Length: 201
Image (cartoon, rainbow, N blue to C red; front, side, top):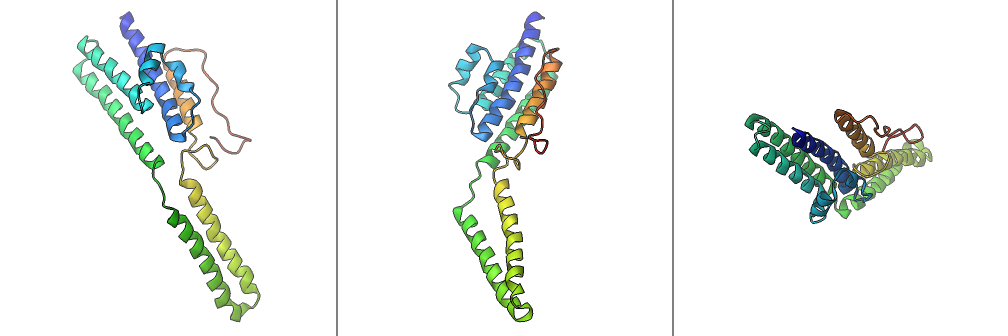
């Protein structure tokens, strides 16, 4: 029973580590925060992995298989837990595919070019009817499309640590707090707060 509780705690801590390791991978930043949730032996194993989040899921899959062989959990429970690991793997893969999608440079170039062409044509077409105001109207129309283009550029990298990105810091911290409380921990980290009261990273 004591071994079962120990393995359960290790698997939950690994899941917290998985969330932070995946965040590091998606943001291509290494702060090593996830390492505190693993033993030195586990960290040594993970250091050999090219994909650390995937390696973490493999560690949990290994312990899940061990618990099944020891008859600590039923086959039905094993299938449920294994299904969760499969879901984690699938969602991790989807996130990585989104993150690694490369937009061709021609997409950016031609979008800017077409905005300028639109501004010029609007100005020329309206010149006869509104005179010099066509310059201002053309500029306003161009500005609207330019801002839309810039917003689109910002959304091309949804996982980056910018105001328009997904709040991975907050999501990771909420998961960490919830899982630590499931383990009965009284001392948990503070939730991530909004930067300047405006946005959450």
